[in-house]
Image (cartoon, rainbow, N blue to C red; front, side, top):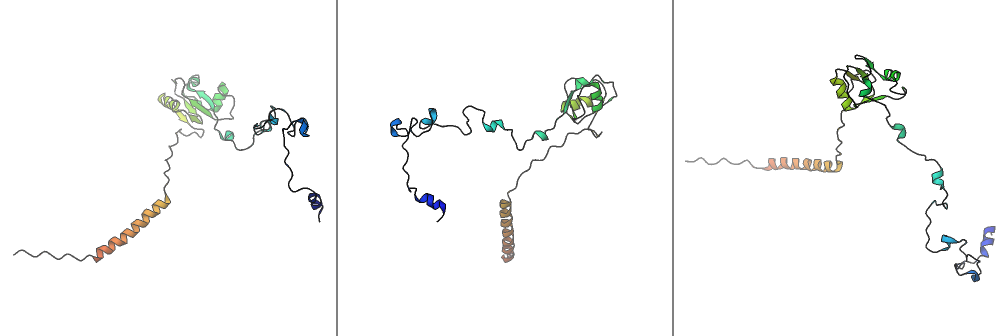
Length: 201
């Protein structure tokens, strides 16, 4: 017999439950078997998961890990049309020109042109994105709006709304139509030709 059986063999099968909260005279000391004072010594108390007595719990002390869309966000340096009015007419306004003029801090991000203000000069603007109002004002002033590749900027076409089709329903309709067609053909072949009406005398 193993050692664990030697230990458990002398232990009674049914241990009597400790009757807690019966005072110091119960033989279980001051806390009467509950081991503590305060809320935990009372019946029906609830302590939320992760509570550490008011100390900042461990799930708040450690940084978060996992998936985040932060790294996939599109970020731009913002420039308004009113800022472009300082360039001379006919100038090609790209990120380098904006950086040289102090309108953007660096060249790490593409530029987005917003439509705040008016533009009274013919400029060729090269940027990563435009608002619709900015694009309209640049074109109305006789200028050109280009993307970073030097092509005429165009907004992408809206995607078609995907309409999911029920494959089960489609199969049932197809099967019904396939069954109905042979039945109609058979009915047409079985039908006797009508005899001509007798000629009137």
